[in-house]
Amino acid sequence: MRAFITGVSGPALTAAEREFLHDAQPWGLIIFKRNVTEPAALRALINDARSALGRQAPVLVDQEGGRVQRLGPPHWPKYPPAAAYARLYDENPMKGLAATRLGARLIAADLAAVGIDVDCMPLADVPVAGADAVIGDRAFGDRPDKVAALAAAFAEGLQDGGVLPVVKHLPGHGRATADSHQKLPVVTATKAALETTDFAAFRPLTGLPLAMTAHVVFTALDQMAPATTSVVIVHDVIRGLIGYQGLLMSDDLSMGALSGSLGERTTAALAAGCDIALHCNGRMSEMRAVAEAAPVLAGEAARRADAALARRKPATGIDLAASQAEFARRLSAVWEPARGLA
Image (cartoon, rainbow, N blue to C red):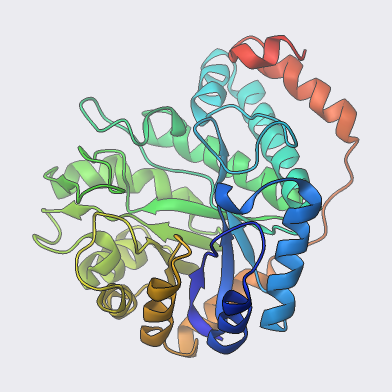
């Protein structure tokens, strides 16, 4: 298998995509809204992709809740943004943590039912005043201790449901004054400020199996390269100061923050120290360019990948209907949609 994750174009594989998956052998597949119609069709797509790959490859999705939820009504429940859990935590930390674990456990049940076993969540980004709204209510708060506690609870709920979490966006997207989907954000905060806020939220989460980088320049650390393609940030900050030693993937290489061809982006991210390159948009010409630049997964990257997948475990038992009712009751005080369900 090769050191990249790919998307595909629609709700069913094309013949060209099936051949591509078989020949290029990406490490995993990522699902987006364009791939989602109803549960049976999504499960069929995932089974078809795994059949083409010839293995039980990891299948990822961004199922955060709030603005970022790829599986949604009418076939799947709507979930709150992270900020709703943060409001509950402010009222009672133990209740906030319990609700967060339960929400993540319910998301995991939804995902596992269709064959998805990796959720690109939780965020541990710490927003600051004046930052771009791209993070906003996706964050668990504006204090690193609170963010770390709620992120850990969310990760625990996912893992209890048999789904691996991906913590993002290392070493922090909360200060970005631009949306990296569109252009490259540049953060000018001092190293000391970054260490006490942004990095501090990630340090308690270094035991999580997978993580994702940020397409953000931190001028105090590297004047030119965003974290995804910065040797200094990956080795000295993510692996060093923060201490994360699990599988590190890039954020989506097709985003507007990055420059150069898709092959150049892939090479730069992997040379910087990312273990896996992520490409999401399902455009075949770009998929081929990423595949050509991605080497066979080997060495330390392969060890981390194997270690991450070894953390997959069977889901704990859950009374789904009772848990959904309990979740709605817990969230009804802080999240408007839950009031009609409680």
